[in-house]
Image (cartoon, rainbow, N blue to C red; front, side):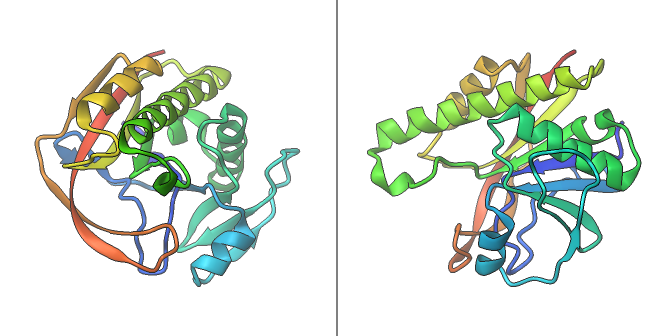
Length: 218
């Protein structure tokens, strides 16, 4: 099993709310290296979450230039998880930094509490549909990125979602991931508890969470 992993849409680090990239279906796997990606640009992210960073300047010719070291892990900023080219370029930066191969990073991908932007604008039914499209587009982008690197092994997409999630219920989440190319989606038997913060880093709560694992095969 790959000793590496990638996270999409990392949020607040003000109180160490990093996405747990060690959990696998009904178990745990130690990681030697993790690529963490954030949707926000670096300047916006730093304005929200005051943490120590060390800039990392990729030598690669990529459109994404903002990377940094945080707690000895490589972070890439301005990554839209629905854009396969963003994922490809973030992986290239991680491959350069960790001196590993793309499949070492892409074999295990973690997503936590992904929701459409400005969710308060939408009625619940529409919000569910928009979130389904978001997860579908994200799975499609991962699929395309993996194909770009010529992966020839299974890829596991681990999705953390609140056990009671009105914004995208479990059945809708599974449908979205399958529509995005997953062969199967399985829910971990454990009930997990995570402390999560809002997008501004101003509120937090302990949330009972399920982990769903979608499998892509190449």
